[in-house]
Image 1 (cartoon, rainbow, N blue to C red):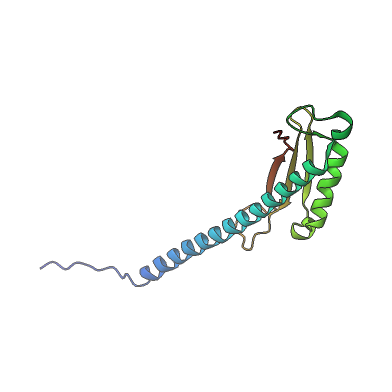
Image 2 (tube, rainbow, N blue to C red):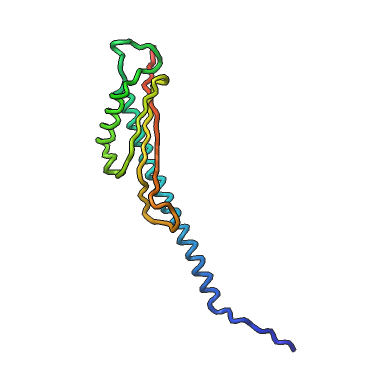
Amino acid sequence: MRRTSRRDEQGQVTLLIIGFAGILLMAIVVVVDASAAYLQRQGLDNLADGAALHGADLGSAGIYEQGLDGERLTQQAAAVESAVRDYLARADAGGRYPGIQVGVRVDPVGRSVTVRLRAPLDLPLTIPGSPSRPVVGASSTAAVTIRTG
């Protein structure tokens, strides 16, 4: 009769449970951080949309002096910049997104306004090896279109 030697397997299940718990914990951290990043980007998207629309609306110029010479109104860069900054100040962008960076561009050919926003990403949890200062960005373009008839 042959005897089979049995290895002592005590502790193997514990190690497996600890490993699965670690993987589950990392998955939870990734989902929580990804959700927070998505929500912050959506907030910046909304802010950029509003700023671009506000800038395009208040930055429109030349209607009374030059008339309506095209499908879109001409934009004055200084007026657009001022309107965008005013909108962001009234929306408390600096308070909601500390360290926000604002870029405003007026396209004279397309007669449109583009607002680009970048802000440090505030993640609730940190993953070892992830960037220490992640940044999220958003941009939006708007123009005032003339409809006749």
